[in-house]
Length: 536
Ligand code: F6P
Image (cartoon, rainbow, N blue to C red):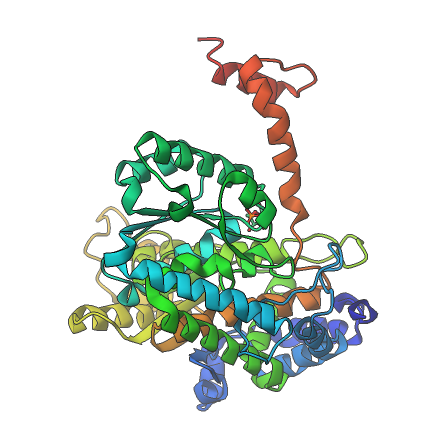
């Protein structure tokens, strides 16, 4: 039973880590560390399936890692991981297993193999039929879903653009705001469109409302044969049938929404890239699963990343982490990771429901490079907060613009270098600053042009962004989130925090129409009046 292991702050190693932090962690200087150890890059290079990681620019030394690994062992990380992989109900608040890894295991290799591969084969066969556009007639695929039923395919389709069927266009409708679906519908004709209604529960307000709008539009525009133009991906096949959808690809309650890209929820991606590439995505993820299951903790990339997250969040007390994919195709990766990490680890009680005395999930955010450089990188370099940055570089592009690619990579490398190196006031004094005001003395200008440096970053390198490497990259992030969640002693697989707002919305919806504000707080009541047009 996973609750048999102590919470991280009740281990003996926790106190040792605190002491180590005070003695060597707080003032750790990356520049000195590189000066002391010419082999630092090699020592902190990690080779995992499809992903190379340079961790050398992190505020960590061998002694820190040793203590963090000891912490992981005392907290039962290997046993908790194995319990997850075996299919024990580690999502104990919902009594569910957590088996997204089973979705990418080869036939016969994981739990539930027969049912997983039955749906996978059927779904990939369907995807191939849609991709035969001459006979299917389909040119547009619209995924209607939100959260985990949207973000995975919405992130992965542009990421794998080089592999996408050239005659198919993909649209993702998630928001209950009509401004999301309306411009999509304007570009469609019923006979060329396939709607995928994606919802694990098939009850989510936004998805159900958008699916109704899509069906009404389809019928109003002369659409015939709903059966051929609407399919569902869901665990609730009965509700899909009640909606009038007969073609359904199912999955199971042991697949969390934010871990469901590998299930039937991946259907839009499977249609986009085809069966063979979808299987390569699964194989890449499976290779990372094996690495996570088998590599010793100190050389286990997802585990070390998760341990580093604990080190940064609970000892350095960094509140956020920025993700900078230097690949435009990964533009939705930060949004995907926000759900993965913040919905999983944004928790405030331990497994027994006791309030935690320490921080959990950082804020995860970011934009593709180089765009972020011209927006918020100012703060990363000179702001008052230290925010670890994660660079994702891809060695070989799938376009032929070598010059652009060289510039992109040089930018990514330069940002990591600048964050670490910084610029002293003395160095700044020696520079000419052509745009500096002549009214200011040189020393004042130099202080504004000083960079503290010593700001940590991790750089991931993929050889190429392919289905296989994307699968491995995403699985790496999943296991990293598992690792920090296991150390924090929380349930990373429920999401009760989304419930309250949903319930209150159900109460407010009729009140917006009627104007009944009885019993509401003054702010909500006042805003309802304003939105109904009162007081103008
Ligand atoms: O709002 C939270 C959530 O339950 C997510 O966890 C989930 O991915 C999303 O809503 C969508 O849920 P469903 O797939 O059931 O429509």
